[in-house]
Image (cartoon, rainbow, N blue to C red):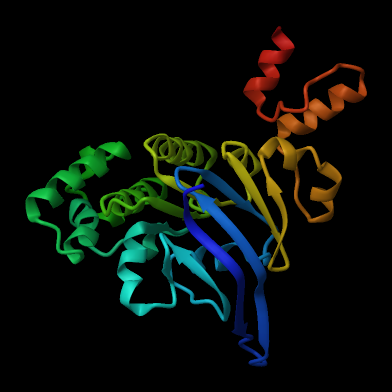
Length: 277
């Protein structure tokens, strides 16, 4: 198995603002992320999802244990830029990632800091804009764009750096349903292009698109498996404060009425297809 990220017994603590007492945000987490995979990380607020995300590319450093990206230890300062070029990050609020007054300059910012040749930067910017369908906005100022458009530009800025893995930390949390679907379609396309995707989310309809789900609670891994496996454990999910996708809930209701809906049906599309057959 070719793992692009490997986590070994990760511990992360921080000091509480009011009392300065240490708090364990992550406890003894060991995970591997296979190259080219699509993993969704779920958990209620305060479960440690975003803290985990920031440990995956060196924004946070472990208090104990280790995180390896392509074999590089995130605590090794010599390789921090190699790590961040390999594992890019897209945050919940795109304004936290936009640094320039012109869209295409913003996308070029990362490659310029990597010392990429200007001709190659031009090619990367054009390709990244096309990937997020924002070419017509290349000369716009980011502050003139909608939140959804800004998020596309933030994604394009990461794509232009050619990462092998992109970590999305709740990228659709500020968007309406249409904007959420547009961003998820971009994420799906990036995954189809071979990029390893790690999606931090609290939306179940986004999680079903992944190959694998990891459930966090109180800083620990509580479940790890395929979406079909995880969503079949409805009672355990409810105990962890999580819902199941609408299609899973509907399928369960139909089973109680005697309709033999297969357990692997977890999306509305597959449920509709089964019922129509």
